[in-house]
Length: 113
Image (cartoon, rainbow, N blue to C red):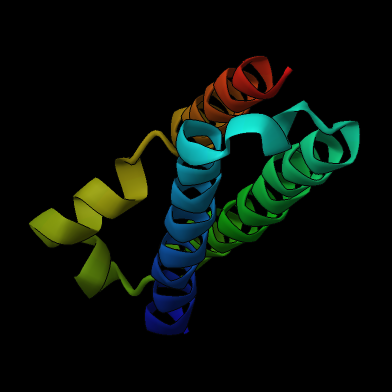
């Protein structure tokens, strides 16, 4: 189960990266088209809603990994990797994820408007 959720967490990275790379390309080469408020709204909506989707997806995966760490056998918990997994600061990871994505979206919105 942990392997599946870890794979799910990794799978959201590519859509997030590609969508924000596309937004940056549009902002860089958009020219006069970005002066249209409808285009601005569409790009802003993609940046905000796409990012919310990605944050929610990744946060759910992290929560499942935390729950899975509580279900590890004693043998697995006593390994070095198990100790790292059990003692990982997941609350900080979850918070940092939201902060970083929020800063990316804020920068894009500032560039759009």
